Length: 205
Image (cartoon, rainbow, N blue to C red; front, side):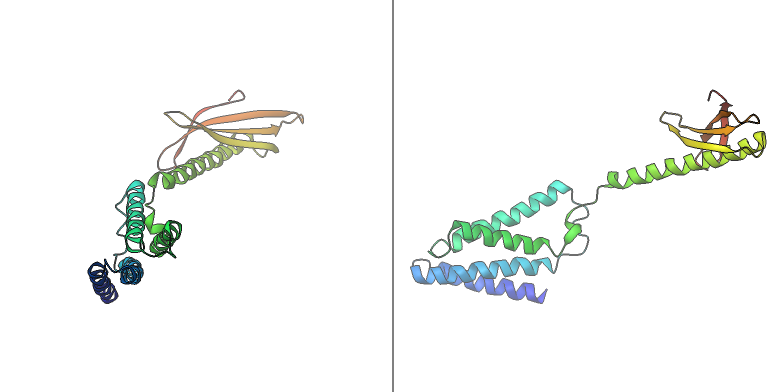
């Protein structure tokens, strides 16, 4: 806060002299450079006093508008303060302003970009579906062992069928007593507590 106040006082002092000597080309050029530099310093010092999490409540568009306002303000200030300086043209003013805005953004990092909860919920939902599918598989495996005993399972597959009433399927390919391959499957319901119930079973499931 002290640095911000100090930068503000310096900027106001330089700005006063810039306005006071605006008719003197040489003085206006000198004070213009110092006014722009002190303004950039003021903006950067302002970064240090913004509370942590200040941008959490803003949308992505609001943050972009905020950054754009900072850039345009510095660009306009550069055009005003550096207009009488022949060594600093429009292009250099834009580059300096962009660099100042970049320096303004970098300390915040990801905080300047609000989190989008929709990106967080997708992996969580997919993980839940995977967990329930695996629970259905383990449940079906126990039921299969109870019904068929210790059969040689050559292939097992499981997954889910997207529907309003989510159902999970498990299929086993095994060798019968004659050495021939047969298939047996289950359709299972899994509730929020991961409790499983067999809805259908059989060779054609």
